[in-house]
Length: 246
Image (tube, rainbow, N blue to C red; front, side, top):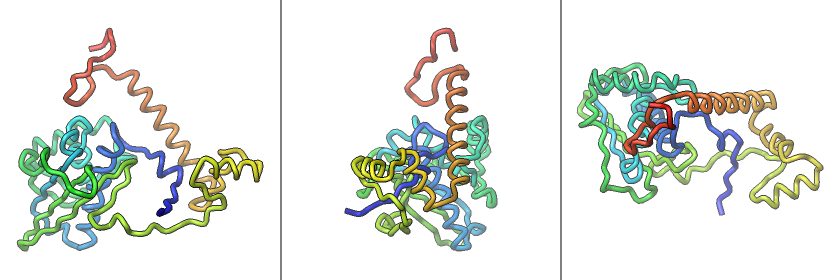
């Protein structure tokens, strides 16, 4: 069985929800596509883009804000730092102006009804959460890439799912709960201390503590915003607000 080393920051990610696989993943995929265009040195040649959503991304994309996440990702915005209260205004402006600025650098015409398609009856074989980006260039050629949002904000490209990930030299390798219990008994360390020792294989203790603090603060802000925001929940389910709100 293939082993996968997971950091605490692979498990806990800051991003705009509601879904890691349907919102954060597609956002990251859109960012990766813009990066691909830059790597190929063709970003300034793009005259238009088309986005094809397949399977689950198509069927539940509206409720999960998949289309919103993709527009912001293509625009070069980052889910960690982008202001939540600007999500609606910016995506509305893209739709109404019919202009999309790829990576914040290259403006192209964009008509959401024609260029962002929900293919409800089509699925790709590798994973149900699939999105294909197509960029059309002024020399008559195109660049296309398919991404799969496999959960937790992780994204793999078509044909790239077997690419090896560099391994860190973890002092306490853990695959099961029994492994974790073993190391705690053997070393006398608490679970948090075992985890911290492993995290040091990727970064300094100060960087880890700062990252965890950022996550904690984001959680508090999300809770506060959820408790103090009035109105109906977004999406097509028409979820009613608590009594006394409207």
